[in-house]
Image (tube, rainbow, N blue to C red):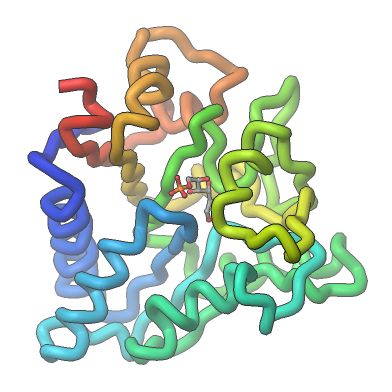
Length: 238
Ligand code: F6R
């Protein structure tokens, strides 16, 4: 795992956006994997700025998202479908975009459809990840066993608590999700793991204490041949 420590959040997002630019230059028909949550917002702002200015062109590339709450309607303001449209897809033209459906009636069929769609696209070239304070990636929560494929996931109390900041008191917060599995993520050719802010310093330290903690899902990334961990100084504990 390659580690890059940037001065601040903005610099970390620009570093990540540059990696997206290079990937697009190498391969205009790239397949990208995107994440939601607070951390990637600065990257989406930067990618939008570059696409609007004409220095990046995603029109031949495909996008897949890591996960979606389940059940949730696409129009729900906290659905990841809504988040991606608001922050990227409504402003930047992609050849295609896909997100696990929080409206699916048959979860198993939806998970299989999603993995097959990723496979049919040629596989993910560059996957963007955030990290939960408990080490989750996508919604693969700390567990005794992990899913290789896209699957139905139950969120832990830690994650429900961390994400409660996005929901108003009148909204029912989902406690379940459909997420790419550890194997789906691991199959990406290159991975960016972005962690910023003091709240991520502890889990980032754990990633680097040189043991493979199977109770920290992000530790599986230590085994992947091409992961770039992008940190700001706060998350790096510097
Ligand atoms: C989001 C996702 C999650 C988040 C993680 C960090 O699609 O899969 O793993 O990346 O929960 O969230 P933030 O960035 O809000 O701290």
